[in-house]
Image (cartoon, rainbow, N blue to C red; front, side, top):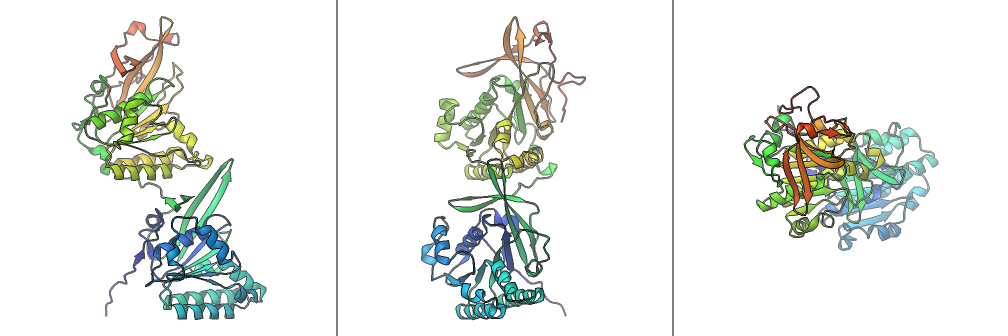
Length: 495
């Protein structure tokens, strides 16, 4: 006799980013634990899920124990946008178990919970703080086995009543042989750390029966809207990358002469790194790239980490932003993570149907991160670039370089391998004056110029001039070392 495979309905939690981390949503009728240290956001997460899911047809019961009294809890939770006053006592009901747990008799606590569940027939049940129940039981003489039996009976009760259940508790050790860890179908562990002046919150789905979840730690932020989870962008296989566009499909850069140096423009879907010292014109190239896209009916997105794009980049950029043709990712928050920026970028790309993206600059990007995220900046950046490529956009990133004159580097992060194309800008000394030069040192799967070209910056932007004569190429008093001439031709792909 054969039986069909059981279908488990997944509930949408109402927490941005959490459903993706969970693998599609929360399994209905599951028995879950939200754990973590005090102040990490457990109660806020539980309330946000509750108000998103509770309806008259699927009411919620929220049991409070020895933690905050319901009135005090509600006073603070009302400050969040997700709080819905109309649902109180209609779809959401709070019940105080403080007196029942005070005696430490787990049998009486179970009886009270069972009575309320039988009377109210809820579809959602929350117990906050469940650890207080366990501690009260131990104080009343309940053994480890008694607590385990209580948890198992509670799980059976909620499943039989077809209630999706959440136990909220202050737990500190993930390796603690606590029976609730074993019985729970889902275990969400929240944590927060303080490093210097940064407070970073992270979430880990330690288990979720019946479905694959995204592994690892996921940063989240608590704002007036509630909790938002930032899942790491998922890398794509090289063959699936937007950089697989035909090389003939090229975009104009908006800088006269640069398209010619690149062999006809930047192939659509490529990622470009513009590297150079301070004041060499990197941001001007980035702005021209977005402006050229707007002239051709394209929309763009910019994440600016060193200066506000609508104030310091001239009237053209201000007009593009004000008119909605260029979207701005807000980088003013403290303690950012790469995953958060990637999530904001991708959301803005989808909103505007953008085809061009600028990140200006990687140096400022790193400084905007919380210290805990800087150690794996390179790996996180690789995931982000891959995820952006999967959306089909063309990406331009700038990188601040210290011009050492006799040492060629494209990025302090070793990110040259991440990009499909590289343009480097340098200073040279000619007749006791500093001049700017530019070269294309990498263009994947495409021929390009290997010339060092002089350029100037004026009110109209960048003007690229002729190739640098060999006899004028003095870098810091030494013979010029042209980019890419360390024993290999620059017209070849160095990626």
